Image 1 (cartoon, rainbow, N blue to C red):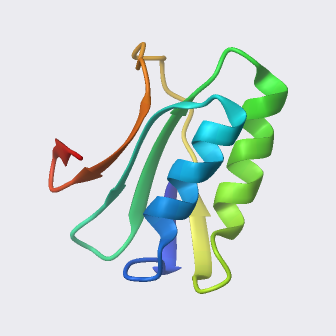
Image 2: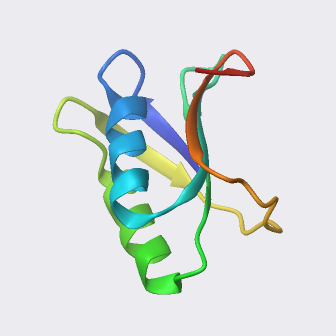
Length: 90
C-alpha cells in the first residue's frame, strides 16, 4: 500500500512497525522520495492482515492521510517486519 499526505516525520514508520509486531505481519515500511510511505505486508491470517491494513491506513494521531493506494502482490516470504530507509533495513 502507498500512503499519501503528511506521513513523513510524524512517526508513521514506527507506528506501522509496532502494528506489524502486534498482528504478526511480515514485510517492510519505507519513506519514499515523493513524501509518501510504502508498506509491503504479508500475513498468513487474512483477518490479522486486514486489521493491520485498516489501522495502518489511519496512521498515528500526528499523521494526516490524504490518499491510499493498495495493490495486491505475490508474497515474497519475508521473515520479519522492518523499517527501511533509502533501500536499507534498520
